[in-house]
Image (cartoon, rainbow, N blue to C red; front, side, top):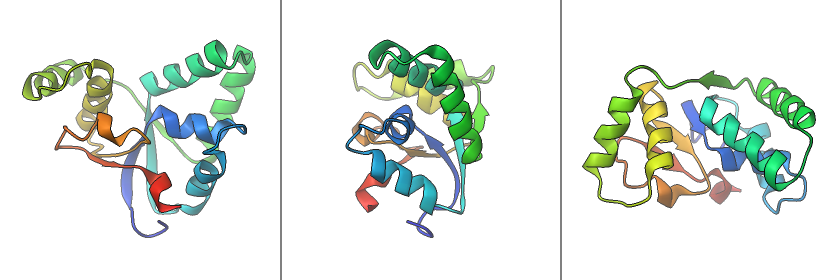
Length: 146
């Protein structure tokens, strides 16, 4: 993994959640992944951050202040760049959902459109099947390498 992937990669919410949840069965794999990769520029979208915060506050019942602090520390420690949808992202998203026949893909395709519109063509996620229809995006489950 250390030299297999290089360049700019988006990171889906699930990977970050596992890296922050010590009780997760994927915690050690997530931590190993982030500690071993060296030649990758990590990106995360604002919608990923909102989803991560929702999971920890709503599902795990962690205090908002702790979630925000832990997430900010984590993103800073691994030099994440935060990206936002661009004015053209909505059009990109509509192109994607009209091009593919897969159902119930609205949030995943909007996430993909945000990354692609920001020139990020690679995505680390545990849920690779949710994005495989999008040929413009290289999707990898990093845990399959540990």
